[in-house]
Image (cartoon, rainbow over all chains, first blue to last red; front, side, top):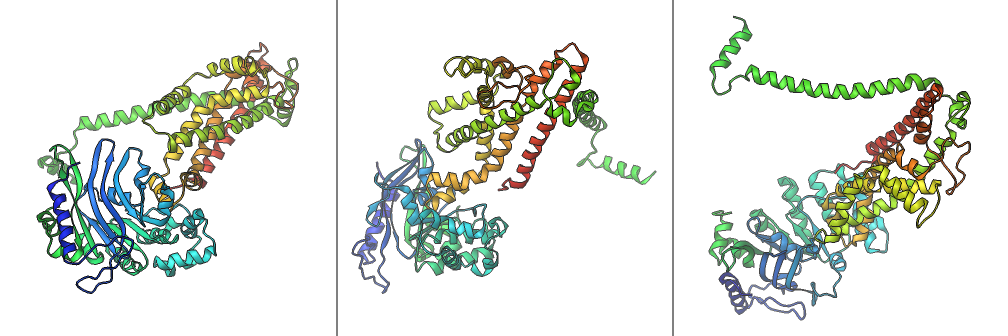
Length: 299
Length: 303
């Protein structure tokens, strides 16, 4: 499969970054010293040449990037560029779509997520996900949180697990007196924090968030952003967002996706244009298209 | 000029928002009137039948009528006990067969079946078709394969129950599929994303979310089966038995059969008994439908 010119430029860019001693390290033996005295950046996902197809149609092509542990990685780009498709590869949610097919490898703790020996259910137990629209279960707040730990067969005091998760989701004080009431009675922002708390209840090591704030007002959005900043100490977070200010506010690294014409000039496919420190993406991007997008000239 | 006339004149001058023409308004009224008349006609027909049945049947309704066995000779000493019990047993047997089979098929078709496979599409199309097959055909099927043929049960209660099960199974599958489909995909995704297996997701999320719809659909399907006469006639339900069914392999009758037998009688008094039996059947039907409505209102999940 041939790469487009842009893909090559991303690869070149990776090389140049390595030359400047900001080395992206692999999961094993990660110790690198960076120029500006940062802690070592360890990769949690090592995405290598991933393409996703729905039937015959290719949705994203040749995505190669490392996502870092204990950082927030933002995926930005116009609609239809494959951000959601990509994030759903990271916990094998694309398996639920019968026609979807993933090529390439995604390294996670030294294993390829798409190896035939990997059980997607086990993957999802380690990698939690929060969706665009809050999707609480039609059960009590308590049972919403307890569902994950129960299906995992987690041992221990369920009350404690639920309390812990709600505290991590910054929701405990608001709901501690009505744990047994139906989650549908909560506000949209509360529902989304419940979904985050629910995902955290099983102590995953990665949290994937697919436009988690797009259905929320700015105040609820602010709460969730604060929450993300707090929990990134313990989790690695990947977030798809249409809100560029949000990406700029919360993320450490940003990947800019866009839709490009394939080499055959007929089909359009999503691809990564540029992936770098969020600061760099927003202040001094390498690619003209990134600059146009983040400065609001297009998109 | 009155205020209204002034306003009308002012409106007429404004070309941007001209008044609705008298003709359009007339058509709109006519159309609404026609639809209302159609509704009224349907209600009138139903009302006339009910009135007629109630006039002849209501005087027959009594505890005796419910507890006596049908008599071929003395109308006043006749009742529907064997028929009513037969109908209730038939419904119970049908429920036992139809719920597990129907729900399992619906779960398979909605949650597991790959629609690109030809055999799944074939099953789907066939279920739609089976739901439209006339009930007498199911009677013939029951006669050939259950009463005689491979199963050879004879014309017994179990044979009637199985035949009615086959009759309503497609309907139950269709309503159960609709109930399952009403559970939003986001609930399944949320569950799977927490590491639940597909089976856990179905058992703990999809089924609880659709159980009210399934239960309502099953009851409505049963209320279709309860009035079925043709298939039971074909498989050979007993006419006016003076005994209750005492087991799955017992002879039986059912309310529609008893009604049919009585209406065939030249004695006018027996025909009045049929009206009484129709009222009993309608009451059972109403009770079942009210349970369905109660279940729907009480447990229906709003998403």
